[in-house]
Amino acid sequence: MEKMIDWINLWNELVRAYNASHSHNQHLDNQDRWRTRAQEFDGHVRRRWARADSSRTFILAQLDAAPNSTVLDIGAGTGAWAMLLAQHARRVTAVEPSPAMLQVLRRNLEAEKVTNVEIVEDVWPQAQVGIHDFTLCSHAMYGLPDFAQFIHSIEAVTRQMCFLLIRAPTLDGVMAEAARRVWGHPYDSPNYQIAFNALLQMGIFPNVSMEDAGRWEPWVSDRLEDARDQIKRRLGVSETSTHDDFFMDLVSRRLKYEDGKYVWPLAMRTALVYWRTQAEKSE
Picture 1 (spheres, rainbow, N blue to C red):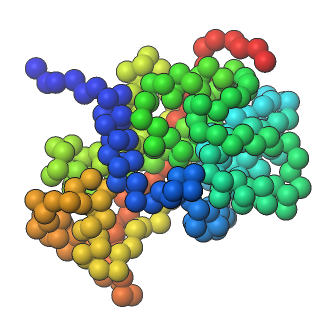
Picture 2: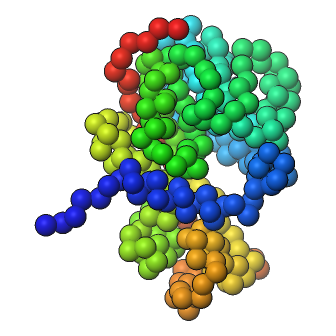
């Protein structure tokens, strides 16, 4: 009999590996890994948002159908979603733990003269917020080690609908091939496939829509050795050479040399996962 996958546990295991592989980006001052990259992140979001996108269209339609609504934005970053949602909601609560991100967020809110966004500087799910009609978490759940707790925590403060925007990698990508070699499955990090099955495991049957704005920008490496080391770091095997020959062969086969750089094949999209909450809640 085929062994059933515990998707919740798999998410939790991959988060621990993900957090360990990204610990080198954290800083002693408030452990803020965005300290030097918040402005760069804001520019990246602005370029990406220059294109129309089906997820934004769908979410805004739900808000427009519920006048005078409130929205919780978990992991608000530099405020792209918060500012957009504020145009369609009575009030938005933006939860963000990074001081660097918040500095840019506040500057953006002031520049756009947005006054109906309340900022909560804290990590989720420790942040104290009230009940909201809608809750959005856009790519801010990858470091949360307890998937079930995360879902229960957002449902507890959501009156109508929860939205998750989460990366959806292809199962034939470079990282998927590397993960199969090291871990025996194609999941190199927390992602949509695992979250969707974990929700089913919890008795939640979500809807899914793939963004129509195209795939993510490809990764680029200066050298094949850099690409190999990136794989090792992401899979938490930086200190070993067990798979080095395989990884070098992998990147040599799969990456293309263009304009002096090694370009990874496109292997990522974004999934919008959403569902209606069950219990009626009051402020």
